[in-house]
Length: 160
Image (cartoon, rainbow, N blue to C red; front, side):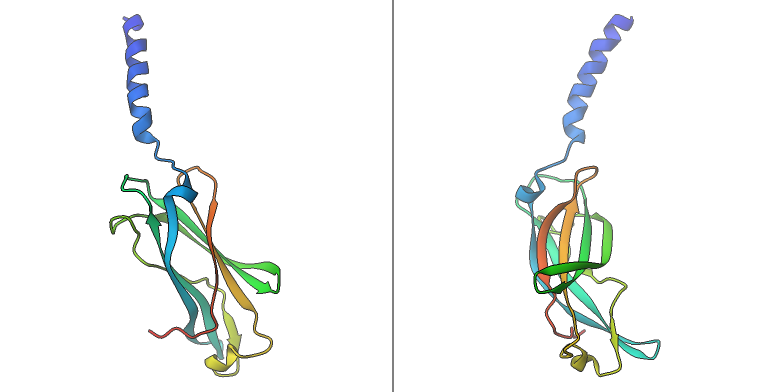
C-alpha cells in the first residue's frame, strides 16, 4: 500500500505547490500611485507645537492576477544635501488590494515629529528645519524587501 501512497503524495504536492506560490517580481508587478504628502498638525504636545511628516499613496498592480497581501515599510529619513539619516519608520503588516488593482489610499505618519515654539506654518520656514524623505519598501510573505519609491515630504501643512 505504501507504494501507491508515494506517487499520490507527489501528485498532490505538485498540484498544490503552484497554488501556494504567489511571489511575483515586485518591481514589475507593483508601483506606487497618487503619492502626496506634507506635515500633519498634531497640535500642542508637552507645551510645544508639533507637526508630523505624512505621506499618502496607494499601491497599484500591473496585472489582473490575484496576488497575496503585501507588507509595507516606510522609512522616514532626515535629508541634508546628499546625505540621509534614519529617523523613524512605520510598518504595515498586511495591505490588500480591496479596490480592484489598487489598495485603498494609505496614510502613513511616524510617531516622531518636529516640535517648536513658533506657529506651525513658521516652523516649516525655520532655517534649522530638516527635510524628510519617505522611502517606501514592499514585500510578499518571506521575500526580500524591495524599494518602490522615494518621496521628499513637501514643506506644507496638510489640511483636514
